[in-house]
Length: 389
Image: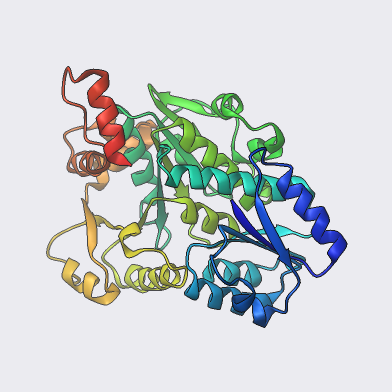
């Protein structure tokens, strides 16, 4: 991997250089030195590096990074910075920075970030893993959690996939009660507290098995523990989950903080959920504007209209015109059946498989994971898995 390391202190440059190099037994092509922020595009000349590490990054660095990324897209940029404000992190993500590492953090965070970059490069070169789907509400009460839970259940039961549902509504998440009456063995906050020993076994032990092949990592029971979960914890959990599950379904908070933005960044497909009323249209427009500022591909965003009834004052065409984005999925209104399923603590796909909601959600899953033909055997399953990637 070709790496540029920029650091104004020669002693610290050698320190960081050895820390990065020692973590990869195959060796890195590491070069660098010091340069003013404005000279960054000229400094990174010739063949662009795979990764750019800037030590001591400040808000002034971000304009130079944006200019560099316009000229040489595809560089993975890591910042080491004393600035941990929400504004700085948001701006960094908008200009294409992949990670911001606190300057006071130990070297293990930098080394872990480099390991993630190597993993990403491995995936780009053909190593397969699961797909990540993120559901979030354009406005509170849209039914995003209900749809995320049922989508995950349908993927496991109707499409035969191994599925993890991760509740990232960290303050008031309740995805687990939509699919089971059992108490989860652990939750995201408790797992984050043990992030130093995170592996597949610990992740599995922390999850509730709601149905065969369907597992749920619950949100913290106490909202006070939401702050225990950091963006690097969420990234580590999602990346590990996608190595061991075919589908990773995220129920993401609509608060666009560092944690939720990291989850959305890692998602292959984002499902913003809204209804056909003016407040949802207004907030949906704002949310899509944020996604554009983050340079998300339009194909990554699939709008879901929930509780749809024909003949309303606003039509689907009105919504598409207002948002300048096509609606991908329309979920019909069947409130009584949905409420009954929630009160029973079971997915509506299980309680009422013939319900129109169940049919739509199951078809959503089959779009991404066609069910293997009966008797297809292992070869069919392998071909289906390759087709998803």
